[in-house]
Amino acid sequence: MSTSPFRDLNRLTSLGDGRFVATIDPIWTIGPKVHGGSMMAVCAAAARQALRDAAGENEGVFAMQPLAVSANYLSAPDPGDVDLVVTIQKQGRQVALVDVELSQVGRVAVRASVTLGFPDGNDPTFVTASSIDDMPAEPSEHAVSVVGDHPMAQIVHVGQGCDMRIDTTSAHFLTGRQGEPEVRTWVRPRPEDEADIDTAVLFAIMTGDISAPVTMNRGLFGWAPTVQLTTYLRRLPAPGWLRVRASSDVLGSTWFEEDHDVLDCTGAVVVQSRQLAMMPR
Image (cartoon, rainbow, N blue to C red; front, side, top):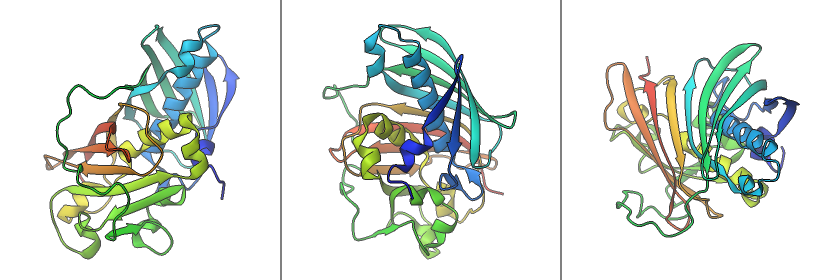
């Protein structure tokens, strides 16, 4: 096992003219298919790299990070090589807009629009109180690791590439009960991935899709495919555990939305996301 598995996920081979190849390891899968948040991170990495490749003497571009990634999922690829085609739509001093298409064997899997800029660095002007403000900064005694023989580890393979702990007081499905469609998780990249800020940023973006579907807390199991996902990076994550709350306001007959709020160990909001997904069948 690599000591920097998430950096490996986002390692790109440039083919020139905004074209890249990446190799997705089987650990970045849910069941047999590549995890949606991991593909979003790869798209963000390609957008950032293409912008830097085109920067010339504009060194300010190298401080830009993916602030917003909006992805439409067209198909579910297998682990292995994927191709990325990047088109820079705007390269400004404060904001850059980049389109990315991720495909495998000629079949498009993801079309993403990436907005790059400079993350917030100062204290926020206003913050609404969050239900995870009282969530401990580090995993509590009620947390379980998604590794080894744990039933979820047989499906959620991403726990092999990071440290992932589920709050069992929120994940009622683990004990055969039902509750509110809200699941809380602690997640942290491997030390070498955490130490590299570019990798840590992409990891934080990935955590905007890290939770098991909250429909499971209502006794609704099975594949809940993501159709559209938009993730915002608000600020650079501080080293340490990330606290994640996944929740939904409306579980429809066909569709549901799922929101992720991600706080770092300082309590700062680092990522927010919302996805449109299909109810399990």
